[in-house]
Amino acid sequence: MAIDGDLPESVPPPPFPDARVTPRARRSILDLMTEQRAVVRMWTGVVRTEDRDSYVEYVERTGMDEYRTTAGNLDAWLLTRDLGDGRTEITTVSRWESRDAIVGFAGTDIERAVFYPEDDRFLLERDLHVRHYEQRS
Image (cartoon, rainbow, N blue to C red; front, side):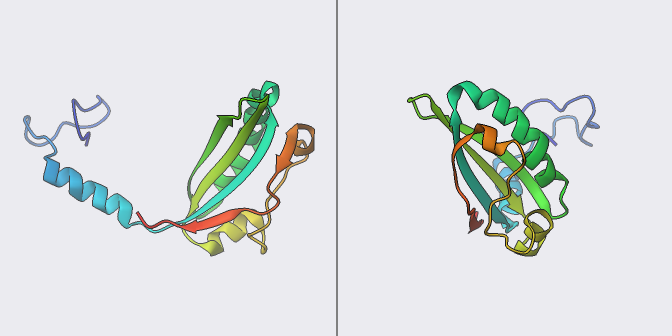
């Protein structure tokens, strides 16, 4: 159900035409969403700004696709940040059900970054190790 506004046509109407999600119910929905604990995996590299779009497209086809299709992955994002000096920082963020689930993507050494064949062509700098965080809210 949509929190605010009209429901999309693909969603059946609520049982009562004037039904809306109240602020109290909205808080309950958000509480349920934050109850899910996850392991967050982050990696950062730097590319030339002129190569940013090509690298983002490449990472979407390789690492991001592999993240998203690995059992236990909850979601994944790719972030970019222009450093203002002709370089762009690329950060991948993925959420996982557990550290054991990450093994399906990274292998037994989950602290080691995973690279793909064309990464060397793009990356000026790269983290060789990833950072893992416990999601708290």
